[in-house]
Image (cartoon, rainbow over all chains, first blue to last red; front, top):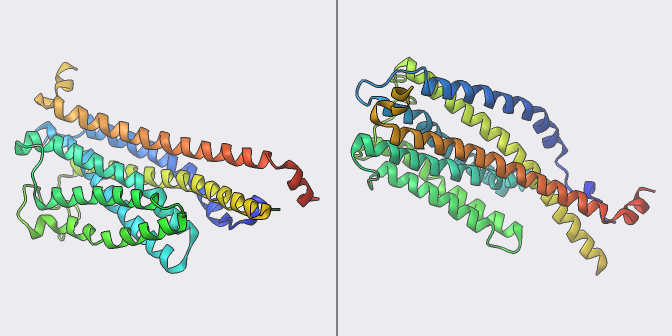
Amino acid sequence: MVALHRFANPARFLRISTAILPWSAAATLLLLGAGFYFALFDSPPDYQQGETVRIMYVHVPSAWLALMIYSVMAGASAVALIWRHPVAELTAQAAAPVGCVFTALCLVTGSLWGQPEWGTWWVWDARLTSVLVLFFLYLGYIALVNAFDDPTRGARAGGILAMVGFVNVPIIKFSVDWWNTLHQPASVFRAGGPTIAPAMLLPLLLMAAGFTTFFVSILIVRLRAALIERRLRLAQLGQEAELV
Amino acid sequence: MQDYLAMGGYAVFIWPAYGLTVLALIGILWSSLATLRSAERRAAHFEAARPRRRARRDA
């Protein structure tokens, strides 16, 4: 007989993640609560941009998360391809839809910021175009992983796409330095330290930290679901084999 | 209050940006929890469907 628990049960991951989840969830509530408060009520308007600067507090953290999640996905895919670690493979798959949503959010909030500040919703310059490519990489990865009847093959093909697509991450980061663009250059993660006023840096960092702990919590929930699905699939396969 | 909501004339850009952000976060959370719940339900169903065999194994 095929008992569920006999199949590669990454018990250690489940134990650690169960311990982390309440903390990451509580941190998310606190950080996002404070982040939204400072972003909307207790931060100054910009001397040039006026109130539209508030869009930064959701736009920039979305962009950071879009890049960070893609990096997690590419790193996890590399680990999965090299060491065949099942949790790594599932991590990449669990992260992808979340990263895809953050990329879309980054593009839409950027558009809502671009119209009042640049006078256009969209421009085909290096930064905007490379982030759009990132969005399509996420969609392509998700489609590819689900395009095979055999999940192992889908995961492997998707993993290779995720790793090859990683080349786009530094392109996005440095696009504002390498090419002429409407988009402003980095003002937080730059040589010489942030150039942004502390009263604006605070809500920005709170939101970014809140988005990050949100992602960690969501990743744990999605991984837990994926591990159950995987165990179930293996058990069902085993049962079919038994019937033959 | 009216003044605040007007956001210096940029309400039409700022509020949708925040609205969509909140919507995206809630959407991700909801769909992830729904996926977990459905997986747990199916796993419980699968185990429940095989009490006889499991009992034999556990014996």
